[in-house]
Image (tube, rainbow, N blue to C red; front, side, top):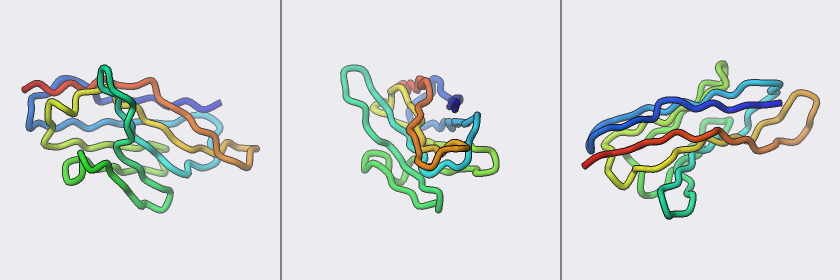
Length: 121
């Protein structure tokens, strides 16, 4: 069994910064890809950032230049550094990952529980 636990959300003023973390635990052989998604009230969940096992990254246009995704393979942890936050960044942020468990040969998708980020104007 694998679990993802997020931390780091909260309330911040526009222009401020927050750093989200997501740690994976369990019978993990490898983590192929990490994702950060977000869902604002009344809106669909959107992909914010991706980082592969090789360190390649990709971002939604709305966060390019402001958000940075990174990973610590030794700690099975992914981070999302969010700078120059805007009120429209307010959402529940979810981490997700494609994880290969010990004794399996294909990755499965796992999700965190979500953490609230609120940016006040």
